[in-house]
Amino acid sequence: MEDQRPEVFERIPWENLRLDRPDRRWIAYMAAGMIAVGALAYSFASSRAPSVEPLGSVPAMASAATTSPVEPVSPTLGPQPPVTIVSEADLMATQPHRLEMEAVAHAEWFAADFFTIDGADSLASGGLERPLAPDGTRVFVDWVRAVGVEETGAASYRVEVMVRSMTAADGTAYRRDPLRLIAVSVEYGEAGPTVSSYPELLAVDWVAGVKPDLVEPPADVSAQAIDLTGATSVLGGRPNAGGWEVVVMVPSAGGVAWPLTVTVP
Image 1: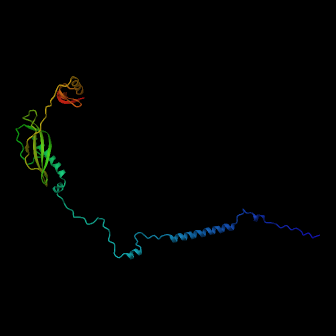
Image 2: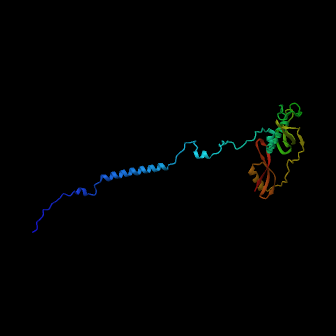
Image 3: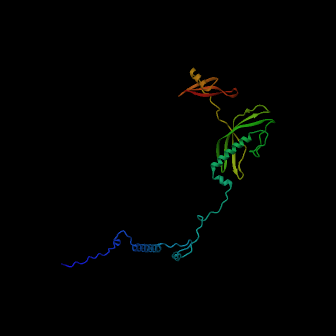
């Protein structure tokens, strides 16, 4: 019979075999590795960063390549022409339309002032002789209108002006004068526009009006024309493509009735 050996039980450090126990040495190794990697990354980034020159400095290579100093750039766009003083007449000569408009306005002003007699001195006629008028006579210019303008030379114009005036002789009521058509010569000088001569009297060939050929319209047309205008009577009418043109006496303020035309379909 074999000798039985005594069984020896040794203590097993089970706590050292546990997998979930953290090893402090590995933590230290990982921290040291991260620090080393960070240092390497910072060193690499610093070596790759471009150098920044201070403002206003010129690189050595550029200054070496320059053979002549650079002239400062002038803010102008090149040599400027000398300043030329242009007279008013020369300046306005480059604007013929403006000259023409001012000549027309000056001629109208002159005509209104020249034919006005109210006891005051003239403003526009200058040294021209004024019209002769009996004491107490007044002339009122109702309206003036330029109907034509012609360029007669360098900065000179001939303007045709129609004048409607009314005269009151020795305190009587104003009465209309015949329609006048005059030509006013306007020239430009250093002092501006001036009238160079007395107004030229022209013949008036305008027809004041043509009497229409009127017939008696139908009764219903006349009644409709009176209803539309409030007229007092019907003078007559004439047919057109759309109905009738009826002339009626239309009253206004002061009891005056005007002959006017109304279209009745």
